[in-house]
Amino acid sequence: MSARQLSPGDTVQLDVPRISRTTLALYAGASGDHNPAHVDIDACKAVGIPDVFTHGMLSMAYLGRLLTDWVPQDRVRAYRVRFAAITPVNAEPVCRGEVTVVEDGLAHLDLTMSLPDGTVTLKGSAVVAVD
Image (cartoon, rainbow, N blue to C red; front, top):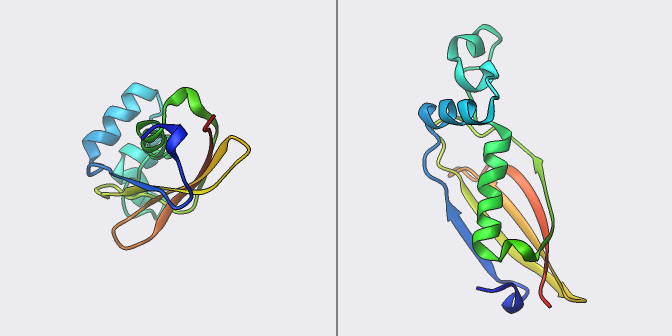
């Protein structure tokens, strides 16, 4: 769908592959973020966290992928996210987007990442040019 065709109520979904320990280790290596909370289960347990969890920027990237798979990147005028909960290792999150308003040449989108149990881990928004 092109950005020119967005209408209120339009939705899109991206099923994210399982976020494994390998995915987290690869992301840590690529990003340079070696925070033990994302790669070292023993360090997590030592501070009372039961297991490693997903990098926030990795989660944000999946939500951004949903957005730029949906509309051309050059149409994106704003993209914001707010972390609402931890995305645990081995999660299979779902990213969703919905057009809420189209006016003055701009489409306003609500974006979320959620777990299969319904827990929303990221809340986001985007503004996309439609003219």
